[in-house]
Length: 305
Ligand code: CP
Ligand code: NVA
Image (cartoon, rainbow, N blue to C red; front, side):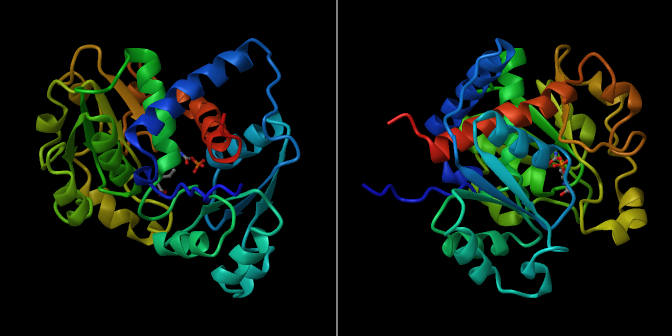
C-alpha cells in the first residue's frame, strides 16, 4: 500500500511526539555508531541534494548519513544543473522525484521549497531556506537533551537576528514546550505572524541582558545570513550590543549551555572566549547534525512499521 508522502519543510510537519521520537532515535543511532554497529536501513536508496547556497555541515551530514545507511547521495549545484539555467522548479521536482527516494533542498525563498514539495512524489527535506532551518533544530534539541535532559519547561534565550534559525526556535518552543526569550535590535525581529501564533511560549525583548536572565540555553547566529552579504556593515552596526560574550553568559543560569549552528564569526555575534569556553557545546551540536539527520531519513524513508 502506498503511504502518503511526508515532507519536512518546517518543524510544524512533525508532531511533538514525532519530534521527541527523532531526538531519542538520534541518540540511539549515535550510540550504535560509537559501538561500530552497521545499520543499513536505506540500502540502495538515493538522496538528491539541491544546494543553491553553500554548506559544510548539512551537506556532509546528509551525504555521510546516506553512505552509512547503505544508500547514496547526489550533490546538485545550480552551477551544474539545468535548474541553474532556468528549468522550472516544478519540472525539476517532477523529474528528480521519479529517480530518487528523497530530495533535500537548500534555497532562498521558502516558497521554492513548497513548490518543490508540491510537485515531488518523494519526501522533500528543508536543508535551510531564508525562513527556516528545521534540520538544525533536530540537532540542537538532541544536544540539549544529551547534556541536560528534557527541555520542557526550560528557558532558552535567542540573541541576535530574528532569522531562519530564530524562526525554527520559535517552532521548537511550541513543539517541545519551552519558553523562548528573543532579543533583537529594532527592525530585525522574527516574523510577526510567528510571534503572534506562539505568543504563549515566546517573548520578544530588546535587551539581551533581560533575555538571557536565568536562561538554560543561550543561542545566537550570524548577523548577516547567506544572501545578506551586502548588508554586512549596516548589520554590524545594528547588532553591536548583541554579542554573546562572557559578561552576557554570566547573567544566564550558572549551568547554561551555549549553542551556535555555525559557521561562527568570532568577535561579532559571539566572543572567542564563549565559543571555545566550557559552556559551549557547538562541536557536539555540529556532530549531532549527522545523527539527527539519520533519524530523520530513517523516519521518512524506512519507518519501523
Ligand atoms: N549550520 C549549518 O547548516 O551549516 P552549513 O551551512 O555548513 O550546512
Ligand atoms: N542564518 C544562517 C544559518 C547558516 C547555517 C544563514 O542562513 O546563513
